[in-house]
Length: 225
Image (tube, one colour):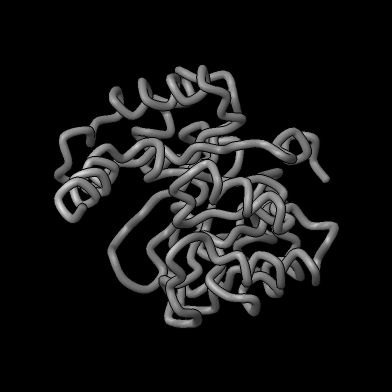
């Protein structure tokens, strides 16, 4: 296992992203939030978009997991080799890409993309939506396997919290892999349960860095009491 990946074992990774049109949708704002997350103890930052990757990489001293979202359906997380290479050029230490079997923008499979990136000395995080995705990612040699897309690809029902069932299945099958739990980890207890279920590390996004969603949770709780 690469030493950078090993450094994330048992740690919290924070996803710092804002959606288009939102008030915080600005690279400098994202960089400030990323820096605040690092001060709070984040072992790495996950972010999207070339401008955000570049701005955050210049502000933090922890590894940056970069991706590039294009579109809203099908494969939109780093959907081609070109997108992956651009993320690396922008400064990310690990590039996250969709690892499903769905058609990719350039026609390459995940395995083909992963092989080329490894030949170029890049580290690859596989965003998976099912056990079959994780199996293919493991066989392709992905450096990290994550549950990022669980509940979003039609392969599995969307769980209320993190998909611990999928996490346990992947960990049991590939105990030597860096299997990260990402998706719907909204509380510290969710994170603890994911770690207890065998996660190599956890990624928390909305529950830390998306104030609109957090405000909605509190508003709903207050108004429905």
